[in-house]
Structures are given as structure tokens and as C-alpha cells.
Length: 273
Ligand code: ADP
Ligand code: MG
Image (cartoon, rainbow, N blue to C red; front, side):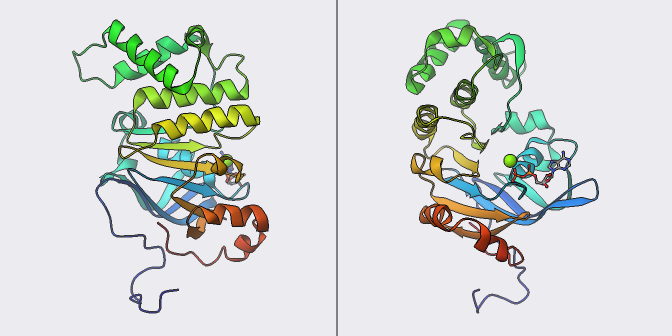
């Protein structure tokens, strides 16, 4: 605890607002009458990769779902901004159009729609009225990104997630991420259920996309993926809030010590960045 902190300043304060960041401030989320997220604050600037780690049930996926605009989750307090704009005031599709990308723990199947057509529709939806996506341009970009990610071209003729293995689903998400070039990407448990080869492929994809134009929030239960995608910051989430923030070494500490100590700190929210 910083002794010189202004006493009037609430405990959830993150760094002063910065224009190019995805920012969560004192967020409270309820499902029905159950409070799931209880005063969560963090800021992910473009150009950085942040990881949220935490035990199951701590509210990590709830945070991602609120960002996506899932109707079951009520924000009872606090706010989320993207480059200074109130994210929660936007319709879900506007959030995407303005540069937010979310990948979920359990991606949906889209039977009968090929990856190539799905991605094309997603890109076209973001264009201003009257503008069209040139087919040759689109395929050139698609194949360029697939090459970058080491994916076989035949993959794009398959229906989205239909009969896909866990690894194939995750790679499809990374391809979506590469094609949409969002300002911020929130990846929820992109590593879950992956064998080591699939994990490395996903990590390679994320690493080849990281850079100054994108802020990435990687949500994970396990430390393992952070050996391959080395985060700039790590936040530990327990019972709906960040209980500790630090550098990449915090992930290693969690791997060694587990989450029990963090649970003990759950009633003491700390400064997070
Ligand atoms: P995490 O992703 O960290 O494992 P979740 O955000 O999935 O945690 O869940 C946090 C808590 O909220 C859990 O207790 C879970 O049971 C509850 N929860 C999540 N979604 C729902 C829902 N749709 N209805 C009821 N409870 C939910
Ligand atoms: Mg989850």
C-alpha cells in the first residue's frame, strides 16, 4: 500500500487514463442477484500484452462476456472504455466495428458456412456503406495471413468450427484475429484443451500479431501458455477482482505457489496496470 496515496482516492484506481487503451474501472457485474465481478480495474494500452490469471470461478470469462455485450450479465457499477469511448454504451456489433475482438473459451459452430465466407462477411460488415470488398484483394490477404500463421489453404473451405479439434478451433480464431486486425483482442482460455503442438501454433500466431497497434488481454487459468506468449503484465484475479499485478515473473510464482495465497488477499484490491 502506498502511504502517500491520497486518502480520498479509491483503492481501485488504475493509472491515469491514456488515450489508446482498453480500460476497465471499478467494474461490478451481477448475474441475477449474484455479484460475480466486484470492483475490477485494469488498463491494457495498445502495444502491450496483459495476462489475467486466476482460479476457476473467479469471473474471468464473465469479464470477457461483459465486454462482448452478453445480455445475461448486468453491469451494476463501473465502466469500460476503449480509446476513451464508453464501450458499454455501444451495441455489440459496434464494439467489434470499432476494433474490439473477443475469442471465447467455447467457440460456436457455424454449420454450412466456410471459414473463407465467414471471414469475408465479417470484414465486409465493417466497411462503410457502399464500399465493397474486392475478392482478389480479400483472398490475397487471407492467404498472406494463413502463411504467416503456418496454416494450410484447404482449411478455409471447411465450415466454421464444425467437427474441429480444439486446436483447429483455436487456430481459426487466431486467423480471424489476423484478418480483422482489431485494436484490442481479448482471448479467453485460448490455451485450454490444447496439446503442446497446438499451443505452440497458437502462441506463434499471437506472437506474430503482437506489436504497437494492438493491445492483447490473454485470459488463462494455466501458466503454461505464458512460457510461449510472454506478457508485459500479469494480473491475478480472485473472486471478481484483481488481487495482484506484476511482471511476467508473477506467472511463474503462481505456477509454483498455486492460488491459495491469492485467495487470502481477495479482500484487498490493489493498484493494477
Ligand atoms: P472463470 O472464467 O474465472 O472460471 P466465470 O466468469 O466463468 O469464471 O464464472 C464466475 C462465476 O459466475 C462462477 O461462480 C459461475 O458459476 C458464475 N456464472 C458464470 N456465468 C453464469 C451464468 N450464465 N449463470 C449463472 N452463473 C454464472
Ligand atoms: Mg472462464
